[in-house]
Amino acid sequence: MQTATDINRGLQRDDFPLLGRVVHGKPLAYLDSAATTQKPNAVIEAIDAFYRETNANVHRGLHRLAQEATDLYEGARADVREHLNANDTREIVFVRGTTEAINLVAQSYLRPRATSGDEVIVTEMEHHANIVPWQIVGDMIGVRLRVVPIDNDGQIDLEAFERLLNPRTRLVAVTHVSNVLGTINPVKTIIKMTRQTGAAVLVDGAQAVPHMPVDLQDLDCDFYTLSGHKTFGPTGIGVLFGKAELLNAMPPYQGGGDMIQSVTWEGTTFKDAPARFEAGTPHIAGAVGLAAALGYLRSVGYEHIAKQEQSLLAYATARLQALPGLRLIGTADHKAAVLSFVLDGVHPHDVATVLDAHGVATRAGHHCAQPLMRRFGVPATTRASLAFYNSQSDLDALITGIESAREMFQ
Ligand code: PMP
Image (cartoon, rainbow, N blue to C red):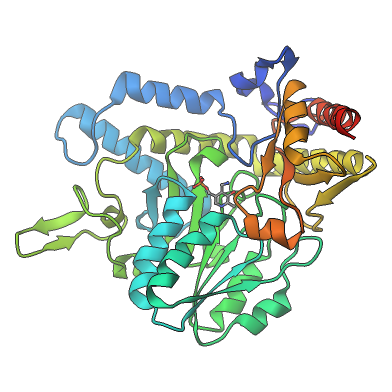
């Protein structure tokens, strides 16, 4: 295992077969990990082995394969609990991803509890997944969305947050790490501040778990979410953590098989969490792949990951800031390796298209954060988002590509 920080080559890059690809005749520089991460062999092999050797449905079968599949699925849940240091495996609900996790909380936690005039607090930097579900439920019952402003570097104004907290606050929903700005938010402080009121806190961890250790018992939030595909695991699987007493007091989000205690024509009783929120056949191979991804992350080690990513971030920031006419959006003191920028006179989509021709995969657009784009007065940005497998040469290719976009369009 390669552990020394060396930004000339990506950490454990050889574990990721796709990173060896050539795109448009150039070696791929994959700088779109905030959209989705590439998968290590450990994950690909775990999914392959599941379908080759074990595949069966879970929970209901008495045959050998069904028992093995159930053990793998429930073992994955135990691995997630351990990885996040949650109190109990029953607090780990498998869902499709962060989007479904937040919708579940909006429909099953907020909707039955809130009354007209209640408030949900979010921040200006939220992903649409952490805005729209609250609006959908809010519009049904008259719940107002209150928005915490951020400063020009992309940092939450904690004093403004304190002023927004009030007895009508039902829930505070905040991202741990911004997918656009890279800002790492002081979620522990936010959770502590919210505890002074009776409100619950949901933390959107989609961009955090791929980069940093998360200790849920230490954080003490009520809900936490992650997406498998952003955490080096498969698509279609994610996690909602919820405190057991909250989950068990929440009505199911969807009905169907595997979540009931008993069904009669008169009515149905439900199992406790997590089963009550996992109607139907779950994404068994996805859970197996996610557990493999988290195990792989632990084997690489978050301290090595942070060192590598922070070195790459420092290098990229210095190189980008030296380019005339380039404005970085997101310059918080404490940030993850995400670099959003606009280039004078060149549309962000044109920058991304030229970069693609250089084999550099970035993303251009509003990044599902339109209110944040408005806050910074830009219609879109080009975003390079990094993971530990990136290298200095990926960033050099980025700089060369931006320079050539400028030559072509300015
Ligand atoms: N929150 C954040 C901060 C994100 O970056 C994303 C994905 N871009 C989401 C939520 C939604 O995640 P998913 O699409 O995996 O449900």
